[in-house]
Image (tube, rainbow, N blue to C red; front, side, top):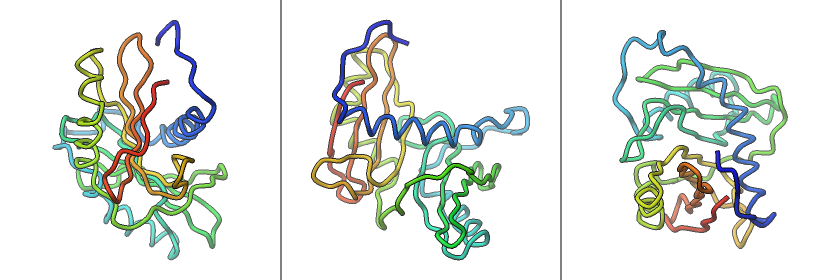
Amino acid sequence: MPTTRRPVSSRATRPALALLWLALLLAPLALTSQRALARDPAPVEARVGLDLASAAAVSWAADAQLVYVENDEALDPSGAAPRWSYLFHSHSLDRHRAYSVRDGRIVEAENLEMKLEAPPLGAGWMDSGAARHVADDHAGLEFCRSHGGELRSMLLMRGAIEVDAPDETTWMLVYLAPNVPALFVVIDAAAGKVRRTWRG
């Protein structure tokens, strides 16, 4: 972690804090022992596991709606990962349930006991590969080349930004490198346009 950090505005910090909160809530799903995974599956984009997770969610609650997606394992240069998590909300149950999909199987499923304000994602969001391409072209590749960094996290959510379009479904990409502030890139997941970039 860096010993000094450049100050960032409270407006820029708020979505980052929300990001970290959700990531911490879903972190237990990514802690399954690697010894229990017999082989390393090919990385896939985020939509590949969505149908499986959605079917399980509807079995849990007929009104389940997708509210959040995140990579659970390392991303490759194409924006694919071996494992993704999908978080659903049921209005009738007033509960959230997360499914972690790896190699065409649900490897973890867990109810989240904490109350979240996570609205359902909009339809037609771009897949993780296309989102990474946009973010890399905008600032990600330059950050990685200049600082020896990497794309660490991709998070699909609604309401990640507060300027102009607070209800957009967006991809938030988090690039990390040693001894420098992280790079955050937020992309409109429907239009494929960069909405916001900051360091923090």
